[in-house]
Length: 68
Image (cartoon, rainbow, N blue to C red; front, side):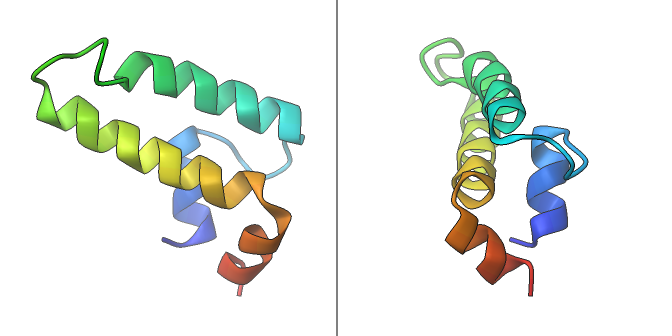
């Protein structure tokens, strides 16, 4: 996943602080969490995308790797 795509998934531009990134992630994670959407495979896939994007953007080392 490219860094730009990860930012797009979370709906951020790239100038946000770590706190703002976490806030965006939590908002989407709650919305698409499988426990809130039982049986909805699209929501489950979206939750996985959101989680992956946050994993990249929250870790400075991973962020640097994907920025190349």
